Image (cartoon, rainbow, N blue to C red):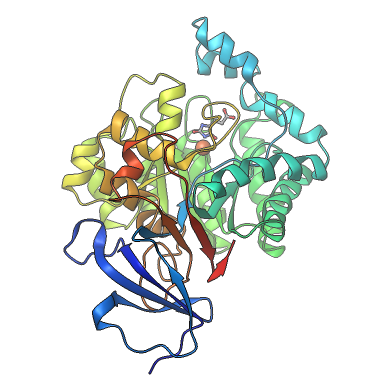
Length: 404
Ligand code: DI6
Ligand code: FE
């Protein structure tokens, strides 16, 4: 006899483990939860006896790991619908940024907003994500740029998990844009990040990782390397917005610093992919930004697949290039726009997304010992989740074994 707080039966499992089956599936299964963790899973007819366990009926649906959105900018004030209209008139994202709009527009609004307002708005976007089965979310700073607002953004991001059952991982993205007060002095701003902000964030334990925007309209390779060096010295893992609008060499830089993930990658060169693979860097695909910006070039998915590179999929939810709070839609976009298979897109929001956040020892797959972050879907096959838009929502969600 084995101990369990509750078990779910009459259910099929998309474990997302590498067990030789698509989606790591186990049909006619049973899964048991004890002390917030999965304690047993397998075929129903091979299950041990669980005395005193509550029984949940899975209605012959599919149970998946809780989804992980591993790249978002959920905390910000205001919106940029006016810039969306400008882009529809033919003005490019880069042109808007070069004229002081873009990210700096949101920086102005975010600096002015109280923490209560930031929290209220972020919470409403987070609720949308969680309704679709997201149980872990990464949230970046980067719309404050000054010390006070960056710290506030990270505090607000962390505080969201007191309001709603979700795990929040935070990332410091000081090198997101050159703030207006440092215009023409980007190197001084980088020094400010490295000398003033990063040490405080480390001391206050406000971030789990450090990100940069390596781009003509962001920061150059030398500036990004300076941030990575300081971040690594303080014990942070790094990641980056790289090769999105042009090739800069940011992906190779992330590999050199043993980073967690390289995000976007539309302009990565084929020969650079093996560097990511060798250093266990996850490729985070952000099809919503590609879609909104009408980007001219797709990431080289076939080469990534051939290299067996771990590919994650995330919303990039942000007010400029991806005003979208739907991870299911990002999965669909990853298939339609980039050519991922439905299985790859689901790995992208589970196992590979967990790896991008260094949570792959406890989240992202259904496995004994792993956190009981679970989503039950009324579907006949897990490939339906990538196939249809707005047709399926979770029947039940559990975070750490607790029903939400
Ligand atoms: N993530 C970002 O941070 C920038 N692009 C992206 O994919 C843009 C954010 C913004 O325009 O506000
Ligand atoms: Fe982003």
